[in-house]
Amino acid sequence: MISELKNLSEVELLRLHSSIINELKSRNVVRTKNNPVGDYTEWLVANALGLELAKNSASGYDGIDSKGIKYQIKGRRITPDNKSRQLSAIRKLDEEDFDYLVAVIFDQNYGVVDAVMIPHEVVKEYATYKEHVNAYILHLRVAILNDFRVKDINGLISS
Image (cartoon, rainbow, N blue to C red):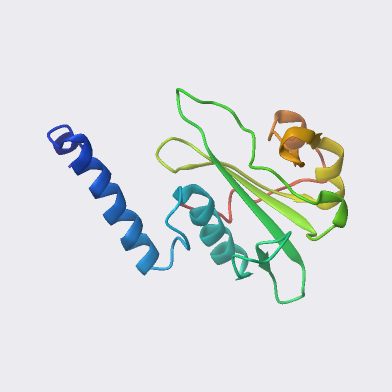
C-alpha cells in the first residue's frame, strides 16, 4: 500500500490525508481536523489512564480522572528530519490549572518512544518562559526523563 502512494499526485495525496483525518474523527480518535498528533495523543492517554477528556475550549487541562486530578497532555512526533523534543506551548503555567503534564514522544510512524507523567511543580522547574509566544516551552530532555519525580508510563501507553 505504501508503495502505491508514489503513484498518486500531490492533490490526490492531500485528498487521501483529508479522508484519513475525517475517518479518524468519525472514530473519535481525533477531535479536530488539524495536525492529528495532539488529538491522537489525548485519545491515547485518556484511554490508557481512564481520563474523561475536557471540552476543546477548556483552559489549562485536557483530561480529568475519577479523583478530580487534572492532566495536560502533549505529544510530539520526531522524524529523521526533525528530532526536536519541544512540546507545544504551555499557557498560564503559573495558574496551576493542571496537576500533571503527560508527554508522549512518537517516532515517525507513531510508535511511542517516551511517555511520562510530570508533576506540575517539576514542569515549572524545567520549562522556560518565552515572551514572543506568551507561554512556557518544555523540551523533553534526558534530565526530565531521569528526574525521580517523573513517572515513566511507557508500559501504559501503546500505539
